[in-house]
Image (cartoon, rainbow, N blue to C red; front, side, top):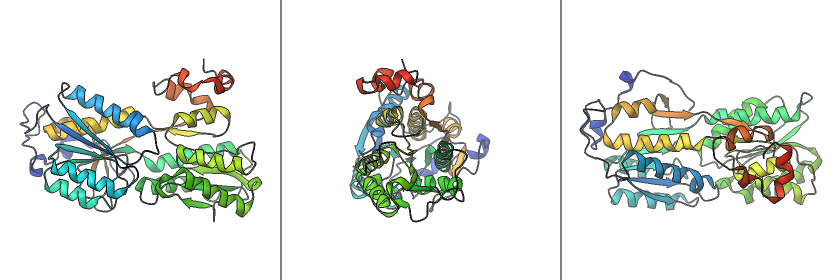
Length: 369
């Protein structure tokens, strides 16, 4: 499901928006006759509360952008499913029953939600898949190049292990949830770099709900199998689980952490990187992703074809649908030396947020002043 088309001419990508039962568009942003103006309601469905990014970044950024695009007339109905696929289906069904105008969906279970996506389509409600590629007839998708995320994590991990790395080095893999299609792509990307260079056999775990407590248990199991001193590195698919990894290693008596990866640039992870407890994280520019989703949602429901097409010049395939209009946002690796140029430069965190009392010395050493 990686990017298979880029920079396709807008004339070849114009969508048949009138056929969805929501819009009466002519294909021109100036001549479109949408059934909706600025007084719209956008449903935002997020998957869990474990990852702080959803409430701290994604939702507030979307809310602000929707207000900007609708002259402050647009409303947002925000719901978080707290890792429950059934809860999310209920939340989405209520939005359909309430005749909400458009839905931005970050699925707990991409497969399980397909039936509810079909119901939204039947009700004439566009669905923008966000971050995770939901199955069913979604109208567009915005995320990151997920295999590239895994590749970046693994390459940085190999760099940390140095030039003498070989297949005798054992790397524990703490992968994401099996119900999240992104997790499979992260894992595929990581293995494309790790395979044949280190040993991951019998040391790879798919972690239910991306749960840090389960990740901690998995690392404890790996320590019991091969011993704490034989773990050369830990591939953790995200930062929340990396926290569980560190807990397990500390509980086993490890004082100098092996290289540990992450993703999402959580504040705790940035501080762990400064303290030498985590080697890297992947910074995904949430403002770009969240603003793109907000724009897609507003333009879609207002019938602004040209603006919508300009945002969706990639295409991806899901197990149920082909050639889904998409935008794939680029990512970057964050190690200690890159903190200032990424999350600080982009205004994700202030230095005062990162450099609390416990991290003052580490911040000074890293040039964060």
